[in-house]
Length: 135
Image (cartoon, rainbow, N blue to C red; front, side):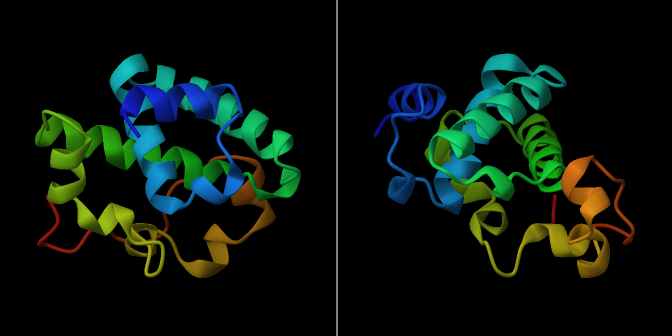
């Protein structure tokens, strides 16, 4: 599926839930960053993700800190090491495509990330940051 087709199906909420796993989630987020820039992607993607979750009956799954943190990391990585396309971005940043362990474990303690406060609103990281080998 092309980036455009994935984006369009996600926004229209016609993408089947069983075709929207972590990698597709990151790919759509990357597309939002490319299309809307930052901070535009935060508002646009967050609202689209909430609509998608509601359309799929997954109202309680939206997590604001995870959503915003991934968008911020994607934007920073793309700014530092621009890729011509999704395949290039994904190949350069495979750690973003791993759900477990998540790249966010470098930035957030489990207790903070799983808190209601982090789910309902963005919270700043409580850990020191990425390992030295991460761009």
